[in-house]
Length: 510
Image 1: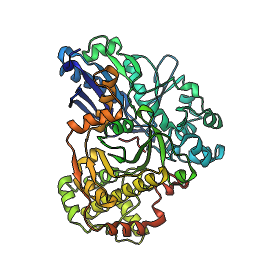
Image 2: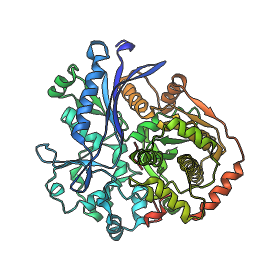
Image 3: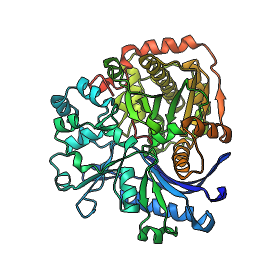
Image 4: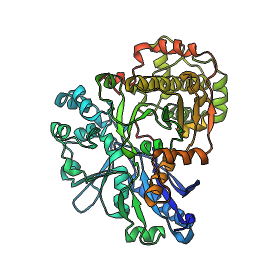
């Protein structure tokens, strides 16, 4: 097949928007074109926060239609899907969706962690699954939903990317990188942990068979072909369907001694390993061992990310303020550095609404100056994120025995040049920023390798990224000891996730 015909569609669903992106791939070329973008607006119904999954699916169909219109003969080599993690849809025996998927930020899991801990103590749960404690992990959602009619009637449980793939193809599977975020996978065997499922009364037969990235996931159904204008047969390929798994494939590292930070609504900071770290010290530091592409482990910590700034902007706008983000970042760059910092992993910042007030309260509780202006609040958020990035990378290196010489920032945060520079300053290491579309690129690269458009392992895929994508390097500047003093001000309070009450604390990142 001529290289010009190797075009792949990456369906990339994030917490605030979805995109369908077309990637054109050849051994020495990798380009992306955004075919369609659509909003992701969760909806609260009778007190429960839901994903509007049918609207998202319609956006996927419209995006594939737009992708077909931009390709020769309306043809795509394949389609891959990545989304956030942990959430799911329940299907009846005939494939009918029984209920709209519940949003991971909904409060229904309140108290579920205590019930899980009573059945399987946190150290045993970590030793079995290697997953950090997050109050919205799938096991907590399932325990919280145990008595609901939908779960009682369910024949199948499909994680969000698997649900989209099922509607496109009629074939059901559970992609492994996303399955690993359920807290039901043993990262050593890369298979289901019957020990955990049995202890919690979770029926693993609800999940269809596991799929590895690169596996076939079916072909588009006739009604999908009619809606999209794509020809038969158009295959769907399993990729790293957890968007962070695809984003880590999209890290353009040239040496193995790198750390990554996938930035967006969340910051996911850590290392790529060959084996999980299941020690008690790792659990206490609240690191997760999620599975990656090609047998790798994503050893990382979830940090609240740019969600905090996004929520601040939303609050200020709702109260009549108008804040142009570039102007606000310019003012933040001039604000006093490290005047106040907060624990960017504190679950107190998970929920929406009133974020500036919660940041002010956290500063007040720790005896630091309370930010007085939007610029000072913004500087507090970005300093705090940089400090959390530093701590996560230092802890990951210490706990895994690895050395880090370069930090790669990928995802939407690469556009925030102040955050990138502050991260370099805090870590005392060079930061390479880019690509912004790392998840879509990783999605496309796995599809392209499966189709034979390119060959090689992750090192080869990343070499193609490094040679074709725009990157920017930031060198550490300023007084590094100032970051040491800021970290000391937080002290033991900044054990990311400690406020969950478990001594432990993703996204599904958006």
